[in-house]
Image (cartoon, rainbow, N blue to C red; front, side, top):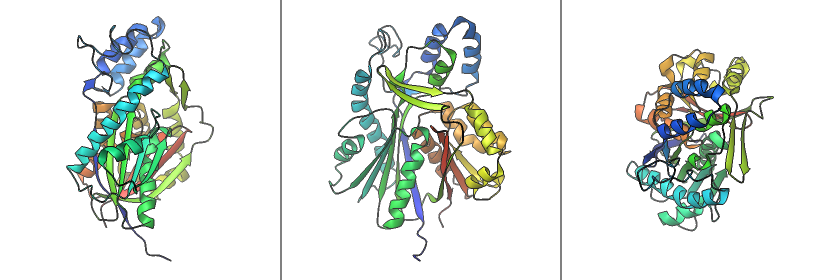
Amino acid sequence: MPAYRPTYLNAVATAVPDHDIHDAFIGWAQARVEPAAQAVFARMAKRAGIGHRWSVLPMTAAGGSPVAPDGFYGDGFPGTAARMTIYAEAAPALAIAAIDRLAAKTDLGAITHLVVASCTGFVAPGIDQIVAARMGLSPAVERLLVGFMGCYAAVAALRSARHIVRSDPAARVLVVTVELSTLHLRDETALEPLLAMLQFGDGAAAALVTAEPGGVEIGQPFAAALPDSADLIRWTITDQGFAMHLSGAVPGRIAAALADPAFVATLTGGRAAAELDWAVHAGGRSILDAVATALALPYDALAASRAVLADNGNMSSSTLMFVLEREIARGSGRSGVALAFGPGLAAEGFAFGPPS
């Protein structure tokens, strides 16, 4: 049997666009929501734990937001083709911004593999090919594109990088996530879809995964589907962008799953939850609260996740990478669990810990 080969998440860097659209969206949605739900929307927006969300959509000539009368969404709701045109330009640019920040942290020479996750747009040649060309990577670099998996796509990307390095210890894998969720604002007046759209912003992250000690070790991955929950989180491609359905029942379903000792043991490897660090996808305040309560964690155990939610909102697959960046910078020296939830309803993640 071959010897165990540890794999390391050496460094993570992140990037967001320049335009903060959170307050403008709240004002826009508050004016649209059904009259009977306006008070509820205002209360939920205030309790969301989000202070900022960033968008690649440009400010108007008058300095207004995309929902201003002369903004991207001001004169009706563009079709999916118009949204994908912006994605094709803005997604690679934001990804490169994150990669440039990663290059300031660690050497990105001799990259052998590129793994890209993106769930909020489609273009061919793919984001992986565009990024590789703009970086000047060798055509021999092996590429993998992870698409439309939703919020746990970063886990799939990092897990794939781990498998690559374990099979080839000389591999140097660049992992990139880039999500432009604000391209998918929709013509809605009902409470639930407006609250779902309230969560999402744009962001990109880049990470280096190698067999060289540094950062945190990526341990055993896990994946688990929660039964009877497939309809709770859905993405549907429409003629008016991608329609996100995020049911208000999701936090309760997660809490119920975390009440099952066998399910928790899958996540923790049988270790006590309170003795671990937690890098949890910041899918929303109620989701973070559900995880903390079900696992009997102190409020500040999810401090990194809550900070990412406050500063950026939910950026789909990029969100967990933002949390991991903070965890690596904190360097507690403890073992931990990276955890994300997404369509299915599924929970995916991996153990992590200090370099061995």
